[in-house]
Amino acid sequence: MVTKCGPQILNCLLNPNCRKALQCLNNCSPVDQVCNYCCIASYESKYLEKFSLCVLQKNNCLELDAKIPKKPYVTPMAEFRGEKLSTEIAEDLFVGWLGTLEWSWRVVAGQNPAYDQFPCQYQLFYRGKARGSFWYEPVFQVRTLEGDLV
Image (cartoon, rainbow, N blue to C red; front, side):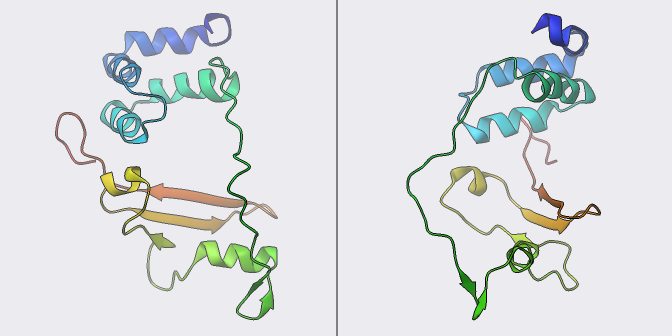
C-alpha cells in the first residue's frame, strides 16, 4: 500500500480530519453502510478523497473482490407500457419524471436501513454528454458525529 499510495497515505495521516476519518472507519464493520457514511460525511476532505481513490479504486490495496450475487435471479422486464424494453426506455425509467423538479427519484422509505437513516434523499440519474454514458448522483443529508447537519 505504501509503495503504491505513499504520498496519499502520508498526507491523510498528517491531516487531522483525514486521520479522524480513518480512525472512525476502522471502528465500523465493512458492511455497515450507515456507520461508514457517517464517518465519511463527518470528516470528509480532499485528503480522504485522494487516499480512498488511490488505495481503494486505483490500486485495490485491500484486495476487495465482491461478487455480484447470483440469487435471487429476477427475470428482467421485457416490456414497459406495451413497448419492447429498449436501452432508451430503460434509461427513461431511471431519469424519471423531472419536469420542474431537481431530482429523478426521491427515496421515501426502503428495506435497506441505510436509506432510512439519511433524510432528504434525492436520486439524480441523467445522460452524459458522451454517447452511451449515464450518470447517477445521490444527494442526502447526514448528521455528523459532531451533530452538524450536512
